[in-house]
Length: 123
Image 1 (cartoon, rainbow, N blue to C red):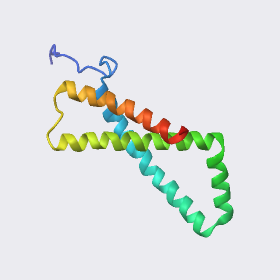
Image 2 (cartoon, rainbow, N blue to C red; image 1 turned 180 degrees about the horizontal axis):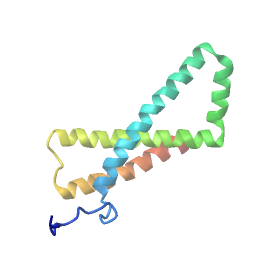
Image 3 (tube, one colour; image 1 turned 135 degrees about the horizontal axis):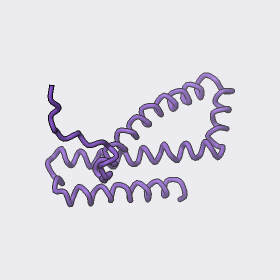
Image 4 (cartoon, rainbow, N blue to C red; image 1 turned 30 degrees about the vertical axis):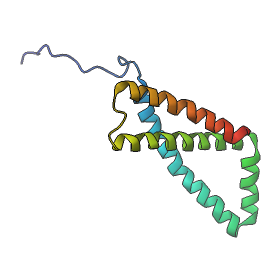
């Protein structure tokens, strides 16, 4: 059988990351983080209602430096996912599909996420 001279599919190493692909992957990743966080919040609420000793342990974890970084990343995920979700709702109405608007709103989402998260935590 002769080997045909067909092009090979490009690998991920060939493509330069674009903001659209990075934001799409980040949106999915933050959705998974928020999904897993709901179990933590439910567990904390359960401990608050029924197990005071475990609640004290969880609260001391959240007040530690590592716990604060953990909560900072959770609020960052929430803020980013919320703002990007609003952008997707606007797209569902048929607005903002121009490539210039896609890039502009992408950068706007990143900037607003950082500003809102800093405001939540430091002001």
